[in-house]
Image 1 (tube, rainbow, N blue to C red):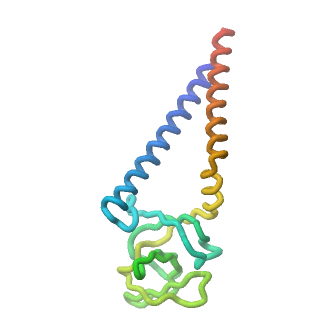
Image 2 (cartoon, helix red, strand yellow; image 1 turned 90 degrees about the vertical axis):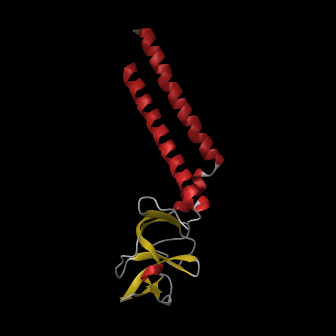
Image 3 (tube, rainbow, N blue to C red; image 1 turned 60 degrees about the vertical axis):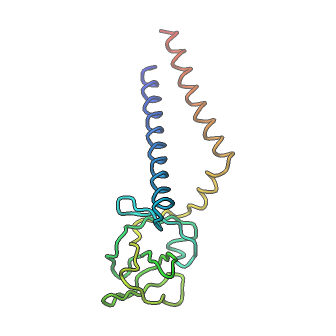
Length: 170
């Protein structure tokens, strides 16, 4: 029984270390792209991540939601795109495509955006993380972080204690 707990503990610790290393590498890579190479957004294997700042796409995408955008300008009508206009990144739905001219509109807006060109498109939204604001508030609270750390430490101590008690009884 002690070997099972030891194997589970070892696997969990290795998994957590791998996840933390991957997050750290992603953070360093993103920092270099944006701050050293002066790119406007990261390019991670043809995808980028943005945080939505307005409610123009409400009911589909809310304020502070995180979107994953596949970089490129190959879009169709009804796709949600992120495009650059006057040094701002805007995420709206394509409602009309005429040759090289594209009309987009926020789902929560009453008027269409000014026409854009395909070259203005950053990419197409492929995934939306809704309600990130709640998770961000929860996991940025020091009480929650301390509670998680203490729980994790107590779990490791419990498993270690059971292993020692099991070894004495054998």
